[in-house]
Each structure stands twice: as structure tokens, then as C-alpha cells.
Length: 121
Image (cartoon, rainbow, N blue to C red):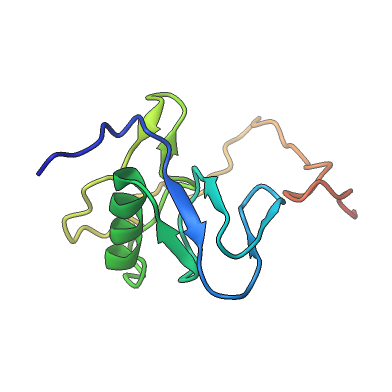
């Protein structure tokens, strides 16, 4: 099988009659194509290139497993490519270190939430 290099950004097409959020706050109309570095969480997205097919198939295969912790995006800025980790049935949630407060550790408070609004204290 001839694969595109994983350095190609996944491209999706909106299928159906609903507008879809592209993940960056810009809606896409039915039939419109767009590049996405995020997980294809909607069934209303049809992969256009091989990178999108591989990312979608990976998401569908592994999304139902509650012990898998995903990165926030399949795109690695460090590697400048898609990174789909081999999970191999491992409990990746248990592998995430627990929060720990140590003596003399600085404390931080978020001033904005993840959507850019002002945090309420």
C-alpha cells in the first residue's frame, strides 16, 4: 500500500446538511473541504486524503476505550507531522503521573479559561 507521508495535514469534507465547527472557530458548510490538525470527532466528516483516513480510522478504533488518554491533537508540532501512538491495549490513563504538591512549590492561577474568557475567582 502506498501511503502519503504523515507530514501531510489531514483534509476533510463536510458531508450531510449540517454546518460543522472546524475546530478553530470557523464553521464549514456542507461540501466544503478544510485542513484539520485535530481529532475527527464528527461522523459528518469524510476524509479527503490518506492522512485524514488514517487519523479517522485510529480515532474510531481507539475512542471507545476509557483507559486510553489521547494527546489534545494527533498533530505533533515538535515532529511537524501526525503522531498516532501505538496503544497496544495498555492503560495509558494509569501511566499519566498524578498531580503532586511539594513543599515550597509555586502556585499558579489561570487568568483565562481555555475559550479565552476571563476566569472568575
